[in-house]
Image (cartoon, rainbow, N blue to C red):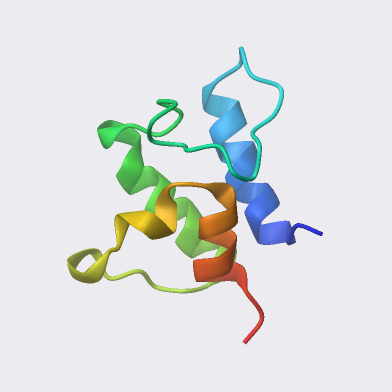
Length: 79
């Protein structure tokens, strides 16, 4: 079951792509151009707001942002 936080991230993505009705948990957000270089920073801020976790831009691992599953595991997994 997806967390409320990851649902916020999914909604953020879908709001920017009105042609889409869903995003699969394992869909590569970067390769599919759902997140590009211009929207990446906004994605990070969206994740921070939804998770309450501050993300250090100096230590970002792009693997943590490639899919909704990776984002959920990196930023929304229960401690």
